[in-house]
Image (cartoon, rainbow, N blue to C red; front, side, top):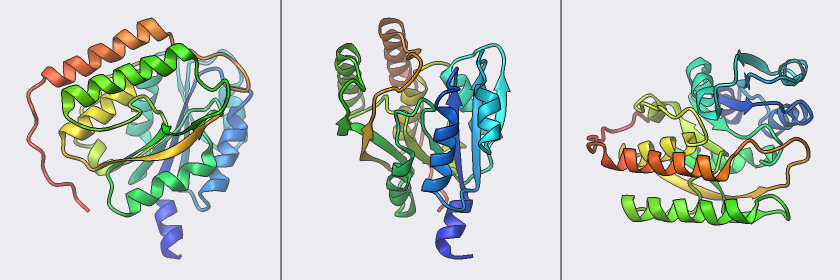
Length: 241
């Protein structure tokens, strides 16, 4: 086994999915193509009422079923708990994240990063890939994080990420909804993890509807930011390499 094969075997890709029967098989297949020798591909079906779970399994994914729908954060946390990889990659199952860009996220991990965020703002949005409300809402929340935590990041809500298990094991993730990305990022920052952003492309959704509610979820994310900022500062301990 080559060093590249060995690295791929230690990666788990986790896809939280809710009613994505149209896209899930294509995304699963594209992930395997992007990472030859991938150790694990896990789809967490979050209470779908369609054939998401069946089509994911037919495409070769290991499927975990949640019922009833619990939210993206819960699904992602379950995937983290049940997966085996030393490096975990998260991306959306709706096809808006491009699986062929997974190697772009894994490269900084191989170079020593602990969390790599695929930034859509460093990269680009295809026409129709984000609403005006979501664009400005994301920028406002990202600016709030930069101000309160003294960092310079561009996309706190990006779901396309790679992270070391060693860092995740030191976190106490609590988010059950769309605040999961913020929960994970801010805990990584406070624990002293090396966070890197890389530019990625965000495409338009090909089927179904987004389940994000800009006002309700935006307020949830803001509460998560404030809650973590007000928590006592943890004492960072070195990550195992």
